[in-house]
Structures are given as structure tokens and as C-alpha cells.
Length: 123
Image 1 (cartoon, rainbow, N blue to C red):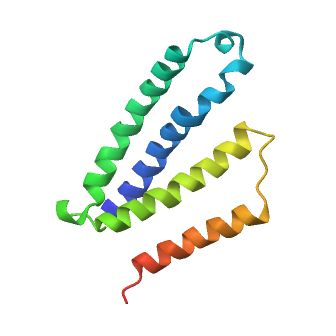
Image 2 (cartoon, rainbow, N blue to C red; image 1 turned 45 degrees about the vertical axis):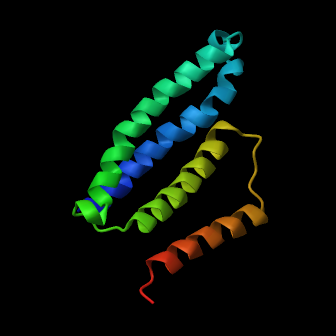
């Protein structure tokens, strides 16, 4: 159960992170965002990052073996990276219609999935 909670919280956390890091690139398309100063954009992104941490910290606490969770530190980081790329792919397809994923992106993502397998495999 802690493993599932970890993954769900990391999905939520990474969604906020992706909006904080890249969502502001769409602000100029809206009347309210056309003339925002850089400091305003930074503060909005920082506010989104706060919500990222509200889920990221509990996710890592719940998932970390040292705190009774099922994952090692390396496994947690690997899960987080795979989730980050998954969330980013969905985000960019839905919000940045001009972005297209080519075969090289899919192969690269496949290699990351392979990395997850290698890291989780008991050799």
C-alpha cells in the first residue's frame, strides 16, 4: 500500500512540478499573462512548486525503505524520473500542440523504462 501511495503522490507532485517549470510558457497566450514581469512568473511558478513539495516529501517518506517503505533511495529516484518523463510527455502533447514526439523520443523513453527494470532487478 505504501508503494502505491508513493507512486500516486509522485504523479501528483510531478504534475505540479511540470506546470511550475513549463506552464508559464503558455501565459503569454492569455490576456492576463501577456505583460507579466519575470518576477511575477517566478512567484507563480514558486507557488506551484509549493504544492509539488506537499506531495513529493510525503511520497518519499512513505516510499523510502529507511522509513518503512518498499523502495531504496535509488529506486525512488528512478521511479521519480520515469514518472517525470511520463507526465511531461502527456503535458506537452495536451498543452503544447506544436510539440511532436518522434521515434527517437520513444526509443529514449524505452531506454529509461529499461533502466527502471535494471535498477529494480535482483541480480
